[in-house]
Image (tube, rainbow, N blue to C red; front, side, top):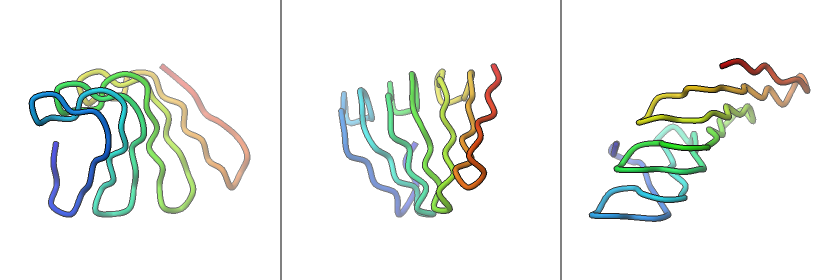
Length: 80
């Protein structure tokens, strides 16, 4: 999961994201959390440039349990 213009700081295994880290997309959106075998896996949060956050439990790159945190409105919407 590497995009041109992206960056990653954190755990690596066999040259791939593995462990806890921070992945920054070219758009400025950041993922902070757990990774495994090069993809988001475990608990993590997307931080969007507008201040909104998307917290989820990830399985092989897909969000399974989600909590969208809209900071401007001061509420949380969660579902699984």
